[in-house]
Length: 193
Image (cartoon, rainbow, N blue to C red; front, side):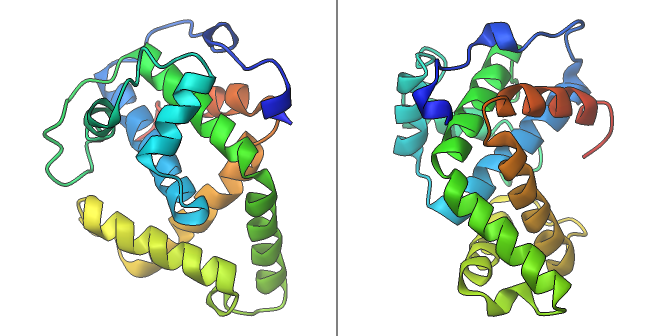
């Protein structure tokens, strides 16, 4: 388990070329959505995120709730994203480490959610009929609609996004999850999310 191993560091997250502003927008959007998925499944709070930053010794990046809020408000698809428009590479790395640390702490819950999702789909059953998945997707879609610009996003697309993020969190919850997420972000940043 990640919490029992030496905590990952920025050294594990290299970048050959600094992403441009558009790529950083894609990265910060994806990171904020992963945090939203964690909040929806495991009831992660701002205080939980700040505590994780302290545990990982990266609390110089995220010092308090206001700083965290401003950082998350930098997501360009958020309603009234007036917090701060810029996310630097060190902040992105900090969020990667925090997300993977929290995913690891809640790995059992994430794994159970993914297993239930696979079972429901293989049995042609609606995931909503399973309490854990129904509660998760309801929280995810409601919070998404409260916080994000709606554009053309409909409920089915939000549901698909929520379940995709749940599956992604399982991959990011293992020992090398932070490297896996970092590489995925660098790959995702080349395309519009």
